[in-house]
Length: 120
Image 1 (cartoon, helix red, strand yellow):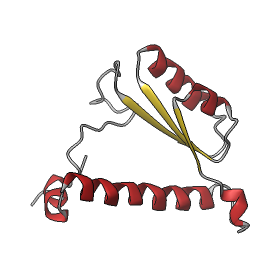
Image 2 (cartoon, rainbow, N blue to C red):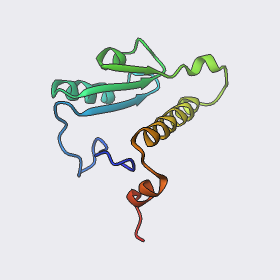
Image 3 (tube, one colour):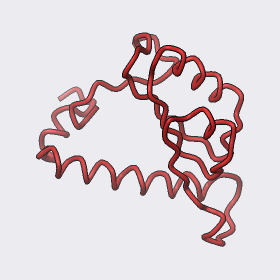
Image 4 (cartoon, helix red, strand yellow):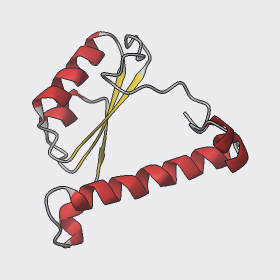
């Protein structure tokens, strides 16, 4: 949204119905959460493009997705509780995408700041 895209969160009251050509990005460590798989199936039926970010290349979610980006946290050999390492890697990966898009689109931090939620 800060880059100028129309962005919504599944389940919010202001989120419009997904339609053909929309992109649904699903982040799931296991790729096996029932609700996330169902969201993906419904979106796919409507013609949306599904991008899964997961640690499991062969998960149920990966089989539904049009694109799977694997976050190989088990290769990092760092012990952290539950999905913490996945979430940290996901944050850094997505921040890198934002930086790349800023550069490619010519969007400045000032422009993004003006789109940021504030009451100023």
